[in-house]
Picture 1 (tube, rainbow, N blue to C red):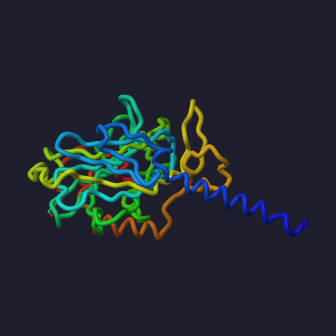
Picture 2: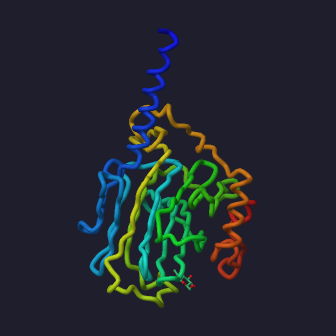
Length: 291
Ligand SMILES: *[C@@H]1O[C@H](CO)[C@@H](O)[C@H](O)[C@H]1NC(C)=O
């Protein structure tokens, strides 16, 4: 009798774990469609979300929860074929005139030409911290995982587990760091052919529309903000958080990840504000000198 007793306990905790993983990727549970007049859809019982852009409008969605720090994964499959002029934005943002924001933006391109992945970090309303990349795969051919690790020490942008950018907390050098304002997750697909592709030279080809970007497997190991307090756990689920670890709250890049980051930055980075001397004749922003 005694030797059999641990089994039901283990079974129950496994079930709780499975339930939390399953519920973590339900778009009905975690997101609202916010605009686009029915163009955006949640499909397959909440497992898939699509954003659609046609000549009349784009579309978008946002998270129900506000987060204050998190390790957040989403799989995206971008507009395939001739996506020139389209922009798919996937970002975290707070509200107000001194907002914080962490951005992924995918700028479409002609068939066969590479997408540009644009990143930026705003703190207290100030951005101007762009880094841009090409990817080592076609982001429209299949789903890939785009992740934001946001903890009090750093913000890390990753693609399929490979870090592409690290923005360290540089408060000691007087640079504000996003850490007091809870943020929602937002995404939208819209037409930006006045600037997005080759600086606006290539226009959206509406005969190729409507354009669709797809989302699945959302997973947030995050601290959910509610009435002035946070509770940390998987997907901000109200059930027990004992099955998840909050190690991400102090996570840093190990040497393997630092090597991967260097590989991406030397082979796939196409713009870095920290090396744009023309833009900063008085010297680079202080966070650029953090090794
Ligand atoms: C589109 O492709 C051109 C040619 O390869 C490239 O220069 C550009 O960076 C790509 N991305 C955008 C968004 O224009």
